[in-house]
Structure formats: C-alpha cells, structure tokens
Image (cartoon, rainbow, N blue to C red; front, top):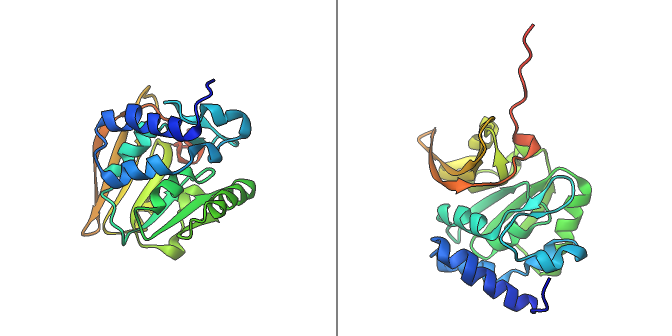
Length: 221
C-alpha cells in the first residue's frame, strides 16, 4: 500500500485518527504512539495495520480501529494502580496499549491458538504486566477480580451480569452496544456504584458484534 516505515505510519495514525477525534489523554496518546500495531496482525496485513478501519484477525476477531479504541480507553479514566480485564483480546494489541497505563491486564480469549499467539507477541515486546488466559468471554476471569476497569474489544448486544459482578466498587466497563436490529452501535460505559450499575452512551461507533455477546433467540412453541 505504501513504503512508509511503520514508525511514520504509527505517528500518522496518532496525528490524523486519534488526536483530531477528542482524544486528549497524554497517556492514551503515548501508548498508541508506542505500541507497534503491525506486530499484532498477519504478515500479509501489516501494510494495512494503520488504516482507519477494524483489522480482521482469525476466528472472527479483529483489532478495533484506533480512533474508537482510543476513545473507549480514554473513557475509563485509568489509574496506574488499576487491575484491568480485556475481553476478546485477540492477538493482544489492546492489552499492550493498556499495559503502560495500569498495574496489570488480564487478557482473555477462547481459543488456545489465539491465546498462545497473543502470549508470544506480548512476551516478544517484553511486556511484563499482561497475562493472556483462556476463558469463555462471557464468563470473564473471576479469579483475578475485582477489576477497576473492563474493556470488551468488540460490539455487544448485551453484557452478562457475571461481568458486572467482577467490577470493583466504582469500576467501569466499556464496549460498543448494538442491540439486535440496530445498524449502528454506541460506545457505552457502565459504572458500578453501591452495587448498582448505570450506563451512558459516549459516541456512535460501527464495530462488529462478538458472537459471544449476541442475544440468543428465544424459541416459542
């Protein structure tokens, strides 16, 4: 597609996709400017790693386009002491971005092959505070809870109660909510206070819905 070095493509992504789109958190900007997105995609996709679209991976996974992911992460208001869970982590790009901003990241995936791929990439970048583990996405990873923040790296038709149970008091969960029948989703943040969860829409976003978070059809007889 082009002959620009990846470092220049990364800078262009930050300057043209992230900064102009209401991303002002210096830590978020620095993370996207540092993590080599091209390492998290297949070799044949590397020249497309920095385009302003979702990047497909295998098994129905994808890397969310940078602008949407950056705004989602910014909305979490992360602290250096936070324990964060990334659900549907794919090859680990989002977790690598999060790693410089928080104390620890639990990244979960369902398929052994994807888990091992993400582990390999994260280890190769010498990121020591990301643990990639195998679990059903809708189950989360209760043994490392509570989490101050959870990000679901894809669209959802609903969020299972089990995930809210793993949030700490004051914890936040962010994803793109796209109920059945809707053409466009809304990035949405949920917050847990005194055991109650409230939500608010942040911005519209076109992100594919993860199969694990689709509402199962109800059969009537």
